[in-house]
Structure formats: structure tokens, C-alpha cells
Amino acid sequence: MFAQHIQGLSGLVAAAAFIFGLKRMSSPMTALSGIGIAGIGMVIAVAAGFLAVFDLSDATRSHLASNLTLVVIALLAGGGWAWWRGRKVAMTAMPQMVALYNGMGGGAAAAVAAVEFGIADAPGLLHLAVTVAGALIGSVSLTGSVIAWAKLDGRVNKPWRFRGQRAFNGAIFVATALIGVAAIALHGTATGTALAVLFFLGAMAFGVLMTLPIGGADMPVVISLFNAFTGLAVGLEGYALQNPALMIAGMVVGSAGTLLTVLMAKAMNRSLANVLFSNFGDVAVASSADVHGQMKSIDASDAATNMRYASSVIVIPGYGLAVAQAQQKLYEFVRLLQAAGVEVKFAIHPVAGRMPGHMNVLLAEAGVPYDIIYDMDDINGDFANTDVALVIGANDVVNPAARTDKSSPIYGMPILNADQARQVYVVKRGQGKGYSGVENLLFYDEACSMVYGDAQAVLTQMVQAVKDLGLSQAA
Amino acid sequence: MAIDTSMTWLVALYIFMLAAFTGYEVISRVPSILHTPLMSGSNFVHGIVVIGALHALITATSVFAQIVGFLGVALGAANAAGGYVVTDRMLAMFKSSDGRKN
Image: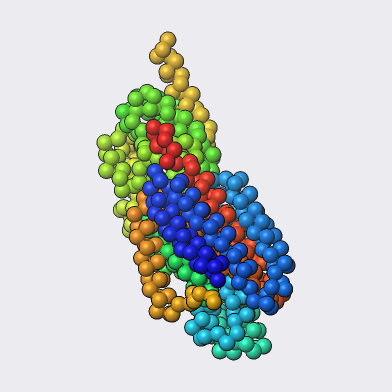
């Protein structure tokens, strides 16, 4: 009995720690302590979970030694593997890593549901229904997240699509749900067990099927959605286990994750339904935009010199910067400009990087302080008073076609107003198009000059050019 | 005498309702620079499912429950441990111009 009280109270402490921790994570000043607090809550809850050994029935006690051995092996294997992978994963690969961990959480929720469904004797209808609903959501999250991970990790490249896919997926989903209902109705019989197995297979198949046709560019939204799914599944299983800590933690993540998903979709100018069902992602789009003028190019060192003598520069980094591993070099260049008295700001589009906030993480890794990094809404008014906008590895997020060209697939997407700066430099590998396959009107603008080359190489030249200027002045 | 930890469906709905609003409120004030760490942080939080799996495995009496419970604990532990590590790594990198770390 005493053990039960401790377990109940530790769940309460854990739930409070999670909410307080998430709250602290909502500001960069306190964020690090936030995850620490949530971590302490988790350790307390898991430690208290072991107290269940004091409340065992006689039937269970005979299995205690083997069960405890299995627990220790599972905790060390699963936790150890994830800890080790999490330590060494590159910051650019963070989105797919989060997807993978999330899928595992969904799998764990599905496993809890399977055990609960299997061992429940004389259970209530509600109890079974909630268990099965959690199992469905958890299983979809498991396989869907794995597909999302594989796509972002470049293991699955082509979206898999066929005619009537939506109807087919819908049929699979309805069939799975019906099998779940039948499994509840026949619970306790051999047929019921067989149906339950079929149900889990159907749910996992649906997770794969619904994720496969979605293009790589939309994956972050999907991962965020699956994150909310897993939270919801955990919350439902919490009810099945009569554990309020699981219910609270799961539902907090379920609602927070849903909100985050909607915010992400909005930042990409898409509705969630559009992301899930439209197959946009990486369909080749023929753009009919009228292109006037032609692209001009400029030497890296000339561009650097102009920036050195400008009074204000706004840097617009995109994922191409991270692909070229050039964040460090960029910050070195920025510090040289700052030392020369240039006011430098970073402008981050909501979908820069592979998910919202990803670019901030990559810049933070390079040492860029967060207080010179600005969100789109905070900085868009400043471009008109800025000497130079330096675009590195970004494309669609500065394309004015989003404002004017109704036929463009990115029409309506909010963009960074780089075209309003007095001078625009675009660092780019070649003359190719952006992720969406759309021609970028900015590149043909009077005030825009292209600096062709790999971001790393270009920035190295720029750093050198500014350093040389410094030396000649000193001489 | 065991304490009664069961709850009615109505109490459960109240808990869910309050938790849902809490999650919404906590996230709605987050600046977008923290979206990625926050997704990762909330991903860590649902790793609490590991204690559900832990309970299932400790009280397992059949080979089926042992196998599935084992998978559940391993996957849940990976979710919690991995979610913590990557969130911590990301957040540890944010610092302001005067060099203060968080």
C-alpha cells in the first residue's frame, strides 16, 4: 500500500515537472533548465515504477526474477542505444532523429495497449475501446514516423503514389477501425485475439500508406503531427492503465503538438489537410512566370568588400548553408563585419531548415547569439532601410513571385522582403531552381547580384577579402 | 488495504480537458526559434509511456506479455533517453551576445 502512495505521488511530481519544464522551454533564457526539470520528473517516475514489485499478486511473484531481468535489459538496451545515437547525431540530421524517437514512443504505447488488451479479464467496454483507440493511434505513429525518418534520412527518395490512393488508404483505415470494433466485441475468444492481431497489422500498414505519398519537404509537419499522435496514444493508454501521469503528459503533448503542427503548416502557407492529401511536396511544377532582365554575377571578394563598407547587412540563411557545412565560416565572416562596425542581423524564415526553428539550432551550434537572430515578422520592416541582404542557400523564401504571381505554386506564402534591400547578394551553387521548382524573380532584379559557388568556398573568399582590407588599412 | 486509484470516465475527461488547455497555453507563447527544440522536448515528455510499459512487464505472467512488454520498455526508454539527449544538446547551444549561456 505504501508503495502505491509513493507511486501515485511521484506521478504527480512528474506531471508537474513536465508542465513546468515545457513552460521554461518557451524562452531561450530558461530553456536549458526546462529540459533538466522535465528530465528529473522522468527519472522520479521511472524509479517509482519499480515500486510495483511490492504490490504483486502471487501469480506474478513467481515471474518476478525473469521480469526484472527483462526490465533492466530493455531499459539499458533501449535507453543506452538512444542516448548514444542522440549524443553523436549531427544537428542537420536532428529532424529525422526526433521522428525516430517519436515513432518508438508510439510503438511503446501500442505495446502497452497490446498487453492491456491481452490480459484484461472481464474488462469494461469503455476500457477496451480506449485501449484500442490508443493502439490505433500509436501504431500509425510508429510506422508513419519510421517512414518519415527514412524519407528525411534519404533512404526512401521517391514518393510512392498511384491512382485511387486516397480511396485505398481510406478503405484500409475504415477496415482497420471495423476490425478493432469486432475485436472488442469478441474479446476473450480466439477469434477476438486473431482479429486483434489483424487490427495491429492494419494500423501499422495504414501508418506506412498515409506517409509514403507525402513529399520530403512536408515531412516536418508530418513528424510534428505524429508527435501529437503519440502524445494522444500515451494519454489514452494512461486512462486504460488508470495512471493520471500518463494521461496528463500524453494529453499536454497531444494538444501542444497539434498546435505546433498547425503553426508549421501555416508558416508554409498550407493547410494541414493540404499537406496530408495534396501530394505537393516534390511534384515538378511548370512555372509560367514572366522573367524580365537577366542574372548578374559578382565576385565573392567584391561582394565582401561592399558589405565591409555597408552600414547594415541582413543575412538570410537557408538549408543550403547547412548542407555546405558553412555556418561556422558564415559566423566568422559576420564577426569580421561586426568588428568593422557593420550592423549585422540574421533573418529566419519560418520554414528555413528542415523544420521551423531548425535553422536557429544550426546557427546556435555555430555560436551565433540568439539576440541577433530575428523572425520574419520582426525583421521584414527593416529590409527597406538595409544596405545589403545576403542570401545564402535560401531560395523560395525570398521569391517575390509568392507575392505577385497567382499561377505560382508558392503564391501566398509569406516571404522575407530581401528584394527591398538596396543591394542583394545571393550565394548559390548554380543557376538551378529552389525546392519547389519555381523560378526566382529576385535573381533577375536590378539590385541583385549572384555569387556562384559552394557556400563554404565563397565564404572563405569573403573572409579573406575582408581580412585583406583590414591589413591594407593598417599599413 | 490497497488505495483506490481508479477514476470515473467523467474525472478522466476533466483531466484530459485541463491537460489539453495546458498544452495549448504552454506552446502558444513559444517564439518560433524554439520550435524544433520544443517539438523534441514534447517528444521527450511522451516518453513517460515507459512507465506504463514498465508496469506491464513487471506484472507480466505470460510469455506474450513478457515479449511485448519488453519491446514496450525498450522502445519507451529509447523515446525518453533519446528525446532528452537531443533536446538538451540543442538547448545548450543557445546563448546571447554577452556570452551568457541561457
